[in-house]
Image (tube, rainbow, N blue to C red; front, side, top):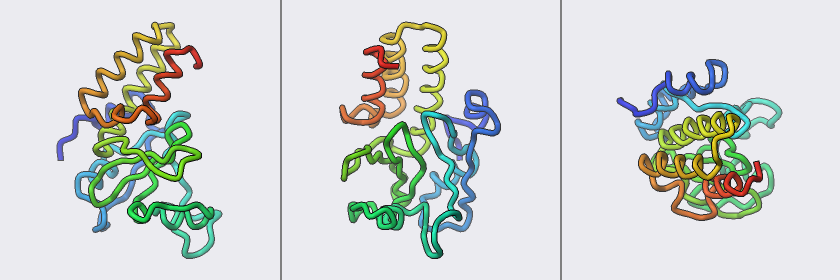
Length: 184
């Protein structure tokens, strides 16, 4: 499959040792596009997005660290019924990020909330936003105007997928608001 975001794009901004690949062959519950992307391009691992998860330890036998229903049950948290089979991809700032393996859509579960927000149309869009956000971080460190950075990020990412900014409470919207107000 052809993707706009490539493994090379990801490793250029995150480095070789900060990319997590998912061995998705033989998993029938995952849509083919998501499986291909996760297996060939991967997910970055950084301070902003943590994708690494030890699925074996320290959890008890029978615990599935990837599936939300199992994870939420383990921690005694309510899990929306429709999201029980979704996969945990990692954390974006303080939001748990999950993938609906049937549709390929990505959702955010904000900290302190019992619900979720549609965050990306697919996992490629998530990674596209993460690559662009890493570029924003680098420019911010080089003293580029925060409002200019925010506008550029919204325009670039919004042209690829409008979902990240559809909800004012999405992690992307909140992070850009903090950037614009000098909280970084």
